[in-house]
Image 1 (cartoon, helix red, strand yellow):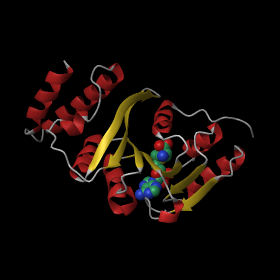
Image 2 (tube, protein in one colour):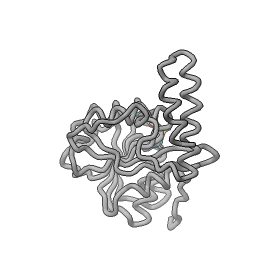
Image 3 (cartoon, rainbow, N blue to C red):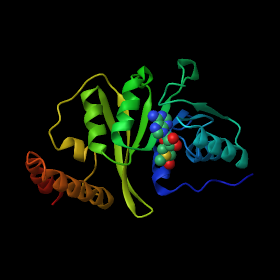
Image 4 (cartoon, helix red, strand yellow):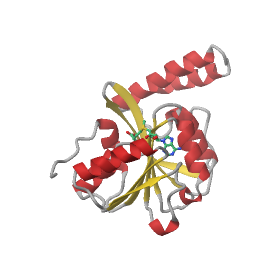
Length: 218
Ligand SMILES: C[S@@+](CC[C@H](N)C(=O)[O-])C[C@H]1O[C@@H](n2cnc3c(N)ncnc32)[C@H](O)[C@@H]1O
């Protein structure tokens, strides 16, 4: 089939952070739309679509047949366990999962500690936990953006391993590398603030962070 896949805005943003000619692994691929779309557009020429569950992997395989894509390998496994150094992966996408699950997947695989690998990360929740994890463990955010998709605001980032952990303040996990002049980023920050305000009812130490964030997004 010669049809192009119309990705939603969230996955389009993830696709935009994958590098040209990358050898990609999409962890938690589900439908595999991201890999299929990148392969069909010619931005990349090889992808591994991997998932911990058989059902989503099967649906990805069916979609690859439906869209006539054959340069895609499907692997069953948790996180990056089915990926080998011989796969010569350059870019890793982990999208559509909670920030703590994404951190766990990064932490469990030595493959992520390669300075040449581009990590594209899209947490559905707890982005602050993911950003804290990255900065405590030698990773740096290269780009971070927000996007509205189907009425919801998401953040997407690219990151890589540098081996050093620069000092950051306590607002950094919430703001990360977002440009606060951008309206969509501000919308994301306002949602973050609402979550923080709710959490602060049980943890008054967060009030200080709320105050600092309010000052910068005014
Ligand atoms: C909500 S879907 C996201 C699909 C796609 N990445 C996206 O962003 O649209 C989450 C997928 O991640 C898979 N998954 C959850 N935990 C995983 C893990 N530890 N390793 C690999 N896949 C996982 C699930 O089976 C599911 O297919």
